Length: 230
Ligand SMILES: Nc1ncnc2c1ncn2[C@@H]1O[C@H](COP(=O)(O)OP(=O)(O)OP(=O)(O)O)[C@@H](O)[C@H]1O
Image 1 (cartoon, rainbow, N blue to C red):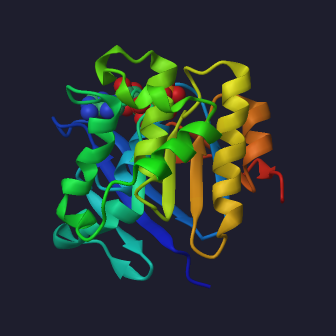
Image 2 (cartoon, rainbow, N blue to C red):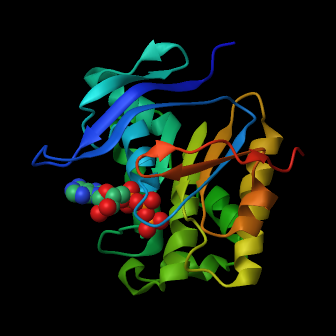
Image 3 (tube, rainbow, N blue to C red):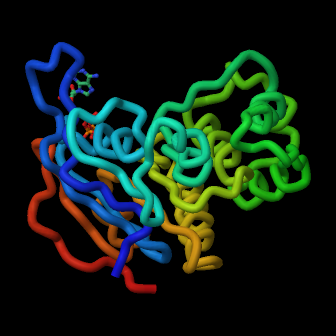
């Protein structure tokens, strides 16, 4: 059966090209899945997620999204459907709300408009009040930044989220909310949503994933088994 995202034999080298960060890596994910990715620091998990959305140039291999090779022209639309969520998100000057409005100016989002009510609903589900919208984005704490970055992504209705340690700066209670929101997000539409979740917390991986993988030295190690199936 065809997977929705398929990476075939992808390779990434450092800019100087003297070292491979990923070499001949195969990976696929299908809608409905929640893939938990763990492994040692510096093992290449972020590099892999970035390569899956072509944020770094591939030295070899290819990415297919829903059966089609993703070429240069397809990248903007592809990235509106498959989104990398950075562990330490960046914001532009201005309020949180101004930052939430910005992606709607991109061509890939044409025809869509910022919806303040939707943003407030996501914030509420993440345990934050609407007043956060008026706060300056550059004054957010690390944890608040992670929450706002999730709202920024979720409001754009993506299909596949590549989550790079999305709760690393959050307290346990808020982490729990994020887990609930993101697991629920996939479960609500399992035929059109999935996520890959990088975490160093083995218990979290167990809670959030339907499939668990270990990534080290730029390669997948042998599977560590199935996670929570529901
Ligand atoms: N642009 C780059 N140029 C050179 N080396 C890089 C580059 N990007 C990443 N690396 C190196 O690639 C390796 C993998 O880094 P990566 O951030 O993907 O690991 P990780 O598994 O996500 O680590 P962590 O769990 O600490 O976040 C590291 O040794 C890192 O220093």
